[in-house]
Image (cartoon, rainbow, N blue to C red; front, side, top):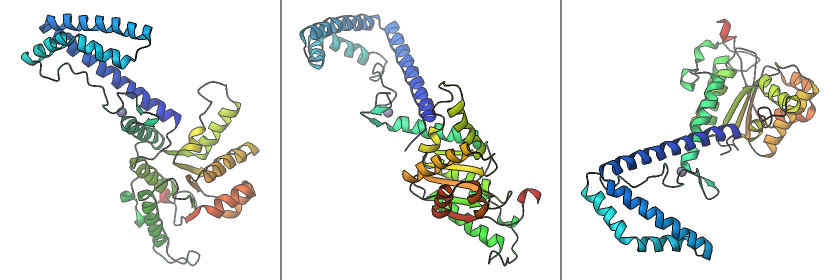
Length: 325
Ligand SMILES: [Zn+2]
C-alpha cells in the first residue's frame, strides 16, 4: 500500500511518541521498584557496570557483542539470581521489570527488516483516514444514505431509461467498486451536470476504500492544480516540494469537479502527468466532471481525452439538480 510521505511522516511521529511514552512508563516502574527494594537498584547498577566493561573489551578485541553479553550473564549469574528472587518474593509480579517494547514484532521501530511492521501500517491507515476526513469534512456520505427518490422516475428518451433507474445502477456499480477495490480496479469517469450526486458518490467510495486500508487522495481539480503550481513556481522549501507526489502514488485518486479550473497549458500538462503516470502504473483514478465528451476533448488535449474517455469507465449522471430540490 502506497501511503503518501505526509501520512507516513505523521504515522511515524505517532509511533515515536508511543515508544517514548512506553519508555517513560518502564522508567517509572523501575523507579518504583527501586524505591521499594533498594537492593534492586544496586544490583542493576552493578550489572550495568560490568556490562559496560565487557562491551568495551569486546569492542577492543573485536569479539562478537552477543558473545560478550552471554559472558556477562554468566559472570553475573549470582546477581541475576538474586534479582529474580527479589522480584519473585516481592509483590511486584513477574512482569514488573520486564521492559516491554511498544511492539513485540519490531521493537517500536516500525520496520521488520525492510518491511513495514503491522503497527506502523495500522497508524498509516488511521492517519490516512484522518487526512481524508479533513478533505471531505465530517460529512455523512455513505452508500446507505444516498437518496434515489430525488431522481425522477419518468422515462427519458435520451437515456433510454428513467434517471432513477440509471442512478440505481450507478449506485450499485459504485458500491461494488468500493467493496472490491484494488488499485488495479480500473478508473471511472463521473459525467453529468452539477448537483446530480457525483461528489456524494465519489465521497462514498473514498470513505469505504479508505476504511478498507487503501490510500485515497480526494481533492478538487482546483486544489490539485494549485499544488502543482506551488511545487513548480513556489518557494523551494519542504512545504511546497513533494506535495504532488501523493497524486501520483496513492492507491485511489479522486479528482472532483474537473473543468471548473482556469485551463492553461500548465494545468493541461499537469493533468496529463497525473492521468498518464497513474495509467502506466496501473493505479485507479476517479474523475468527476460536468464537461461533455466534446467539451473535454476541446479543453484538454487528444492524448488526455483518449486516455480518459477511452479507458475510464463512464458513469453518466442524470436527473434534476438535487441542491435546487
Ligand atoms: Zn511493530
